[in-house]
Length: 425
Image (cartoon, rainbow, N blue to C red):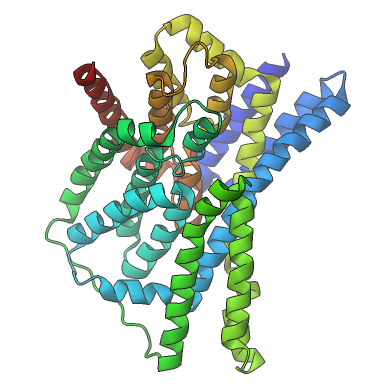
């Protein structure tokens, strides 16, 4: 009864998010209400409310780590933007062809997401596109590809996607093996939708708006902030690997260093001028509703997990399909609706290393499907949620225009993986 009620609320909340524009209700409001109501039903119907509170606080710790990571990354990007740091990058782009720019953005996103992570990369590349493209429709198509490229790029690297990182830390995969097995399927999954989308930009050009003339000192400051910002974003996964602390700790440390750098750079300026370039000002520009939307979605999904629905779902899949690859495909498709983190966590709990040892093809296939499957629906991945908030992408627009391309990408990656396994065996 409790599970049925929570599922009903979750579906209604999902529909409210999908029809945000016709309802004229911000998706953050729908997400927050969905998350809180799901937990309210769970605790009211429970005979041990203290235990439920403990579960909520446990999940809140995991959710907060994602939100603080997101807040730190978005603030650093805002700092780079306020110092015209992205202008330095745009000056290096010596083409005015939209199709060429599209491929440059796609390739950069794919490889950067493996080095940084898909969430940070999606934020950086979306911010860059907003500087380069003036037409909203163009930015939407670019952003759709950024989501696909970030998720496919994140799947083959142990640092690229949180689920791949979970499998790496849990001992289900090793870094070298996952790179070797998934790099080719991920490339194919990225190239196919990119080739299709790029066709509509054939022959089209774009014009980069010239920024207002900067002084030598402003240009120097912009370079310092750009290099420092990107350097610290790259530093975050390295910090996690060395210290074994969660990624948000490295991101907060990076933000602290950026705070020190901006203070030193602007300490001799008039307070009114210096204030425009401070971290405090950048924090004001960060899209707070997007972070609250993320909070609501993750709360709702954690309620499904706590009731045991996700584990039950994994058990049903195991009983129904009785095939490693079919289970992996099903979990990948489910991850487009439900966050892939609890799905992979449930799989780690269900399947022991004695059944599927380290670097078994099941774990590698699971990393591919849950990593790339999230692109099918815009709120199915952290990268999608972040880009949706930054560029205000309509849920239904994405569903109509990008979802089929994401599913094509998902299918192409799977077929390449299976072909690779067949040839190797």
